[in-house]
Image (cartoon, rainbow, N blue to C red; front, side, top):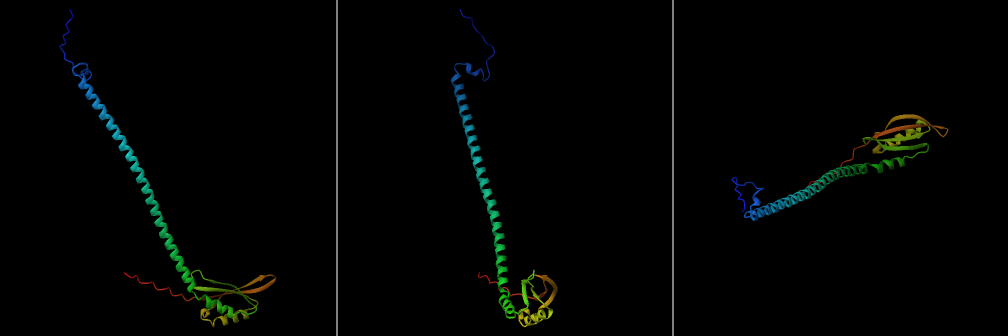
Amino acid sequence: MKPLQIDFVPRHGWLEAGTDKARRPVWLLLCAVMLILLGASLTTAWKLQHERSVVNARVATLQSALNVSEEGEAQNETATADSAEAVSQANMHLNYPWASMLGSLEHNVRTGVTLVSLELGVLRQASKLVIETADVASALSFADSLRADPAYASLVLTRQETVAADGATHMRFTFEAPLAQPERPAAKASVQ
């Protein structure tokens, strides 16, 4: 005869639940469903992480493109302002009465008077004329003949110095004449 086993304490707990042969298929099915759900959640988490990294990369690309665009716009605005200023300066430079000034100098050429330079002042408010002569009388005569031209009507002597070059002594005279400011072209009214 077989010994009779009597168990007064029922078995409870999930570890011992699969030992009952009648309930074993239910527990196996529950474990399989749990493993499937765990795999699905891990796969979903991986896909979400991957999509997040792709979106972050696109945002970084767009942000860098936006930064480059903003820098380009700032450079374009600077370049536009610089080129507008250059055009304005060139226009003002061309509007000075250069032809009459140079024509007057050419008309008053004299022997014994050497033109060293003709330049505009720093603020373009006066032209500076530097000549060399052997004596004071020829320099003053040259200045008087230039004053007949409207561009040199206010010609004044600002400096006199003695220069030794090539074994000869010359006198250098610096004259200045205020320039009349050229009229700027009127801005065109915008049509709306």
